[in-house]
Image 1: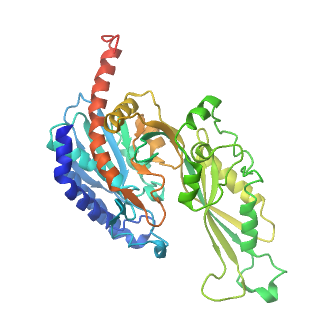
Image 2 (image 1 turned 90 degrees about the vertical axis):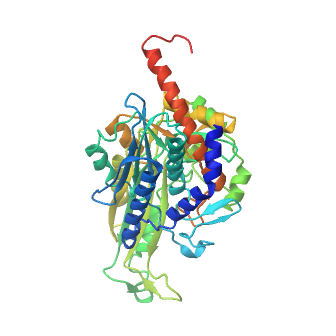
Image 3 (image 1 turned 180 degrees about the horizontal axis):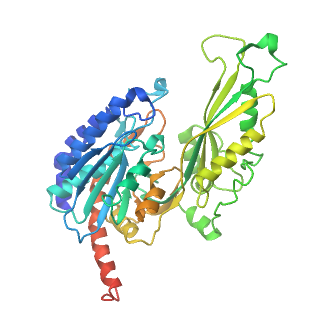
Amino acid sequence: MEEIKKYIDDNKQRFLDELFELLRFPSVSADPKHQSDVLKTADYVANQLRLAGADQVEVCETDGYPVVYGEKIIDPSKPTVLVYGHYDVQPADPLELWHTAPFEPQIRDGRIFARGACDDKGQFYMHVKAFELMMKTDSLACNIKFMIEGEEEVGSVNLGSFVKQNKTRLKADVVLISDTSMIGLDTPSLETGLRGLSYVEVEVTGPNRDLHSGVYGGAVANPVLILAKMIASLHDENNHITIPHFYDDVQALTEQERNALNTAPYNEEAYKKDLGVEELWGENGYTTLERTGTRPTVEINGIWGGYIGEGAKTVLPSKASAKISMRLVPNQQSDKITQLFEKYFKQIAPKAVKVKVTPHHGGEPVVTPIDSVAYQAAKQAILEYFGREPIPTRGGGSIPIVALFEKELGIKTVLMGFGLDSDNLHSPNEKYDVANFYRGIETIPLFYKHYAQLSTLNQVDKAGLVFNK
């Protein structure tokens, strides 16, 4: 442990400088104009893996952006950890809301401000540096494989094919991901589940062209108004989703599970203050912790139509559109939910308009086991570093690849994130605490140490040679 601390102390500035260089790449996978930036980022990640000590490093082509792969096999008889992360980031828009340039990282009040600082460049890069220090201090206790992709923010559209085609190469005992959050800087937690996702775009068309709102207003349906009414009808007065059969497969929590979930530290006044709202809003009958982690949602991510430029233009628009995401919970299936949404949304549209629903991407909800050797190793690592056991929580976000790993590779995932919910993920002024960046680098080697030890004990126990631990 002291050797690890010393290595980090001796290399702190270099670690930070390298992260800043990574953050300067505008690797926005959703925007084609950043194609070359995304490819340059992949090359940078691959080079950093080589410098850290990885073998077989390769920038693997896909039908979209490449996957960066690297490995270090120290002993085939030892357990293998597959580290997953993503080097692509969300668009930085709206740029005018950033206090500093999104791709020119700066430190303010002990926090790194930049797009991708937390999601996920800052978090996956902790693993690269933790790997480096384990190599330099001769303390790597397990085999390690890295798979860092460039399309997570657009639904990992080509990763499924890559995983299926590379099952032998990706063979491992567990997946380790840091793309999630913890409760607080001094309140460690481990996420034990993630919501799934169905993401769609809708378009409502009325007349065959934009019209003069004075000449035609009152006689022709306004697509913006119709779309707004349709969207409003997706929830009832209790904020319950109205799509027929939407809740059919929802796995309700038991009272015991609800009570355990709500023991996590939560200050509603601080929550509201941080968000700048006077009142919270959500499905009646559930707490905030339940709403954000264990209940499905329908949210409007963007809506547009008509004239939105400077000044006035009295137009009755021909079209209106919206982007809609649905977060799903265990037992719900993204394809099924997408079909239910499309059927209902077209059904509630008046004949005065035409409706088009375009599915984009999705992913399945997952629950990770808390009795696995890998989870216990993560728990022990956090206990050793923080001096307190992590609180198990449910994450509100989605990482579609987690379900794919389980399906295609037959292995479970440990979600050991070091971000905070307040880190402005997908928002202007994304940030990441410098302290948590270093905490991650120091804690991750402890996971490998405990995972190797517990895996050995577990193997001996299964062989019937150990009866009491």
